[in-house]
Image 1 (tube, rainbow, N blue to C red):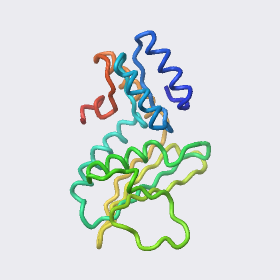
Image 2 (image 1 turned 90 degrees about the vertical axis):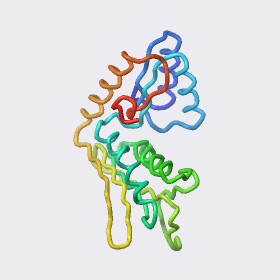
Image 3 (image 1 turned 120 degrees about the vertical axis):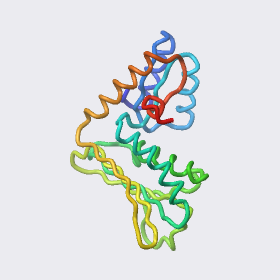
Image 4 (image 1 turned 135 degrees about the vertical axis):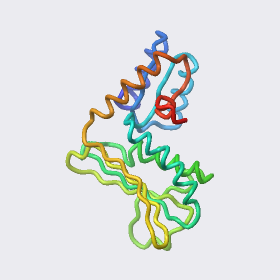
Amino acid sequence: DFTRPEATLQHLQFCRERGVNIVIGTTGFTPEQKQAISAAAQDIGVVFAPNMSVGVNLSLKLLDIAARVLAEGYDIEIIEAHHRHKVDAPSGTALRMGEVVANALGRNLAECAVYGREGVTGERSLSTIGFATVRGGDIVGDHTVLFAGIGERVEITHKASSRATFALGALRAARFLAQHGKGLYDMQDVLGLS
């Protein structure tokens, strides 16, 4: 399901009532809606990931490693770009990248995230993770996590040039669910990266 949160929850209930597994790539859920997905996974198999791309999910693993290695003295910024029709910002993928980095650093993303900057913002706090969002044209999806230190920068970037990559990942997730029982999984599980 790659629709909107309200529709996804209806589809989830339909699947739960019939004992059918579901792959969810929808983004923009509230914490309460995410809890409903977790609850359904007690009865059916659910792969829930904001991005089904194999490359993005490999990037998440690399981000976990990079954040642990670059934990001291690096400012962290997440820059994402999508087509003009995308309605949520930052993207679910950017938020997931932020969660991975924050978790690796022992932080809570809700407490350290800074979404956009404008005007006189004061000096940047070392403990923050910044987000910048671009919307325009037909950009399928670009995500960069920047670790900016003194004298060097490390960037981990993924650029999707076709939506086919998401479809291929979703098919891989569906095949994974056919081999596994009920439970809540993500693409890290599907790819054997967890």
